Length: 281
Image (cartoon, rainbow, N blue to C red; front, side, top):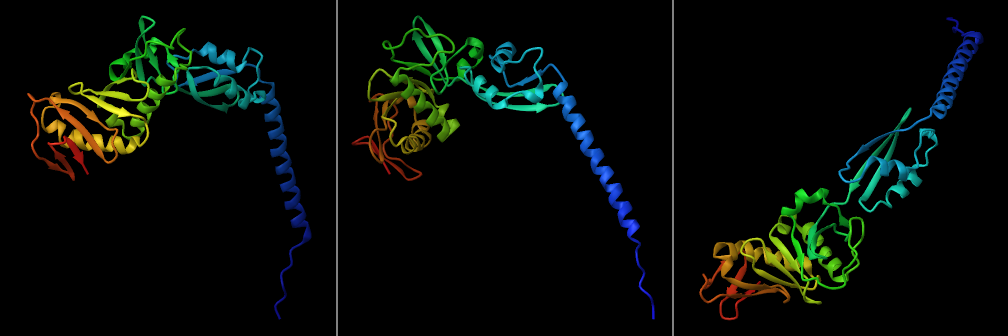
């Protein structure tokens, strides 16, 4: 009968001892590394995504000085302080040992130009913050806001607009952009002269588009786009006196008598009744 081979207990003890020393060594190295990181003085900033926010303003808001230590920084508190900067919409912080703090900044971007208020024009983001002229190169791509001559004062970069009508107009522009960025490029102006009814003007032909309130905005924009692409651009947009989007399930238009007025058109289930000048789904 074949005898079973036995393993001497000393082999297990030797392996266990070896493993103990390996684990102890790793732990010791980790402790020494942690102590070394905590002893490193000085923090270098790696700031990304800024064009109007200065490095110095970030350093001051973060409370970083020559004796700061990367491991001891409170990143949540630093983020909270940085978000108090009116030009910063969001920020993410990452430690890159031994000394680098990576700061990824999302700055506010202009969405419109407030035209001729306090004798000058102002860049506004979607929340109403006034932005500095560093964004001036983008002005030609932005719609202008007109019709505000009261309730706006003491504007300067970093101040947030509090005029309710301006904020409503900005929200409308943001919503249109969210529905379809290409759709937003069809408009060159939003007029706030009337307290209740917002008025848009098209980039092509400067046609007035009565938006009214921002209720049912998605429905209104889809109806406008269907009409604009399938009717207006197939004729002469400058022949339109206005487009009215305030009605449920229809677009009301008026054409100039001397213009190129459509007689009867069917396009993508959109019909025009030239008697009432209404597009009816």
